[in-house]
Length: 212
Image (cartoon, rainbow, N blue to C red; front, side, top):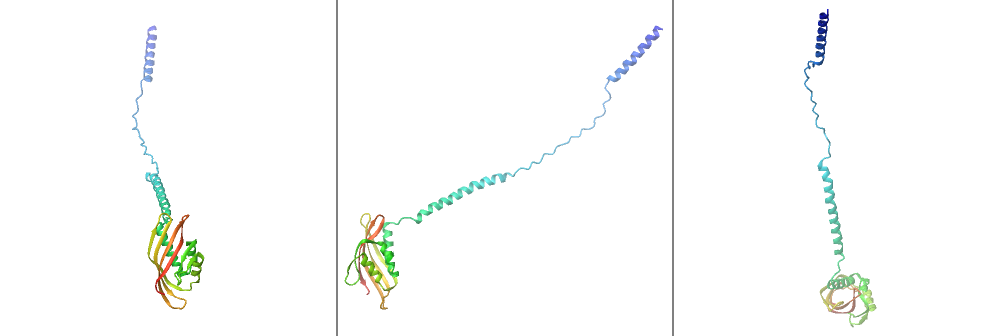
């Protein structure tokens, strides 16, 4: 009886041990499915074209200097128009304006050039000595009609600073108050003095050398 019980106990123990071994042993590993690898597509990043980033600064850098150059050119060109004439050129210009004023009977222009202490010798017969007022009165009383008045062979002589003598010939053409045509030439000598930056005629003498 004891033998049978021992045999049964051994058999039961073997069964339990076998069952426990089956639970402990790894089960058959099912075949692995091939892994599916999802490749990520590179993300599309919208970037501002490099050309646009560079174009704006370059344009700004180039445009600003161009404007500055134009302003500089403009600033440099302005003083040229107001350039002061040399004494020689200024005196020639004034002599030509004086002679041109006869054609227009523009005594006001001559008035600005003649000094208050002016003294002159008239070109009319008798060669009267005249002051500023008498000389301008003769010019106002002139009734001739002029078709041409111009200076010829102007010679400007400078004597130190602010003192000059101009010698030349004035040629005048037109019709007298009697209706007769004339073509006259006068030889003149004008003396000029620079007073406070302004040239003024202080003395003048003229003589008729041809015509009537």
